[in-house]
Length: 384
Image (cartoon, rainbow, N blue to C red; front, side, top):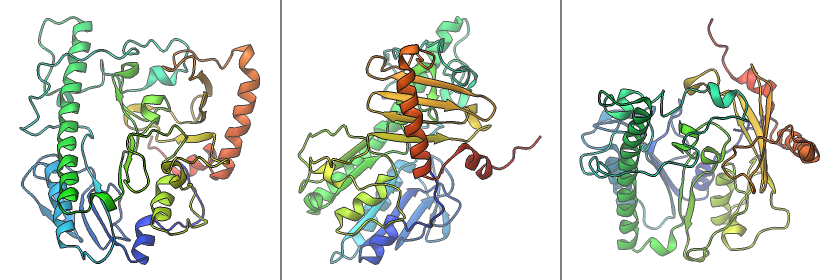
């Protein structure tokens, strides 16, 4: 999370001004109505899985069906009626697989008999980590509720067996929701192919964060650990991207605004914090491309009780600082310890690395005009 004192113009609005048709369909999850879009048909809040309300151009209406199917239907409907003489920017935002996980009838039995391998860190004891890793409320064992698992564990199970049962039910429901997303992305790709749009359309598939699937014994996200920090990012652009190519440079979500603008031939506004990764897509990493990234989570106290923290990640190291009602640091060598089990902050041989990372952390906070003091101003005072 970053912040800026300078007003920013979103990419869709700039594309709209450049002659693009713009639309957003599905999850919006902001208190305001969308701006910069010629058309919007959005879910109020998180939306629901079955028979959801949609707000279409300011008017709310209930629709019969499953939300993932409906979002795809409405996306294709908009593509059918667009002006084919103009370029377009369409944002298709699925609710799934957000909690709670309610698969449709087509997929709900898909993983019913599947046994899932346990993550290597499933029984993490957080032995070297800060208290924040222990005091959260997002464990598979204790914090998945009966809605999450569609009922309680069978009677007579041991504590260990109950934990495994909850993990299995969580995975069954989560992956069934994901399977529906997969199917519907396939429908949309098939539409673009059928309409002759596949070769001249940049398709970006991403998410707003990663997710714990039993890793460290958790579900949900929020922590700066890898499973939560890393986001899926797949891009198909036949004219520029070599199929099957992989880039391991550091890209952040703030880059998502500048990149499509540059791909459309537009300049990046000075107030945008991100950088266009257009050269990376073409297989060319600029000499001055970032070697570190910044992270800040400050929604505490709140759901899942993950303590406020910020940090810096380079290709090899990650430094995290928990603050507010705690003062604790963690350092991980991602090359030797990819599961982030061994906190090296008090290691004598890593003190120079820590000094360098703290210097980089201060640089990034200044760059993004961010601090824990700013977070305190932005977060409403908690009652009591």
